Amino acid sequence: MVKMDNKENIEAENNDTNEQEKINIAKEIFSWVRLVIAAFLIAFLLTHFVIVNAEVPTGSMENTIPTGSRLIGSRLTYNFSDPERFDIIIFKAPDSPEENYVKRLIGLPGETVMIDDAKITIKTVDGEYIELEEDYLKEEWKDGTGPYTYEVPEDCYFMLGDNRNNSNDARKWINTFVTRDALVGKVEVLYFPFTAFKWLGNENYKTIDVTD
Image (cartoon, rainbow, N blue to C red; front, side):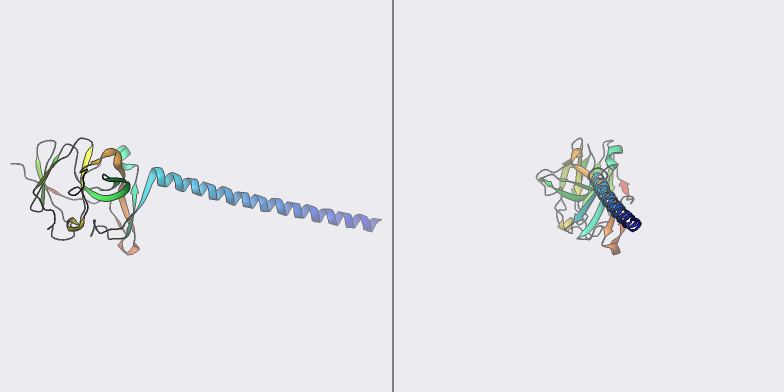
């Protein structure tokens, strides 16, 4: 009788152990599921509201951004400050809003942009004239060198690529200007290829005051 009781106790203990193992496995699975869901939600929120991950498939921004590079931009920057001249920006293409483009901001709202003989002169909203020092250009500018004059509307921006001889930019678009609500984000870093890694959001460029 005692032997029978011992056998039953052992079986009960084994059953309890198996049940506990099942509970522990279920808890572990649930923990992993929660972790995956949390990671997915964080990634979703980051990529839709904080950062934008973009690939540049063409050479329109060379040599600043090589063909095939991948970039990270900030979606939040222009929620707190206005775009500045020379910013590299990801935006919805004026002629095909389903596509994103990456170009450099040249002309600000209310300005007049004049291109002549591969030189850019800008009449600012204050009536001053400035000439851009464009050390970032890939090579000597020979294609689409002007003379052109563009009056940038309010709440709009004038964008050009750094590779002026091979860039589909404001000089060629039907809808010349990029509206404020078409801006997706300011480019901050080039992270791929790793050998070309660099920060792009804090570069400084100069203008020359040519006001008479």
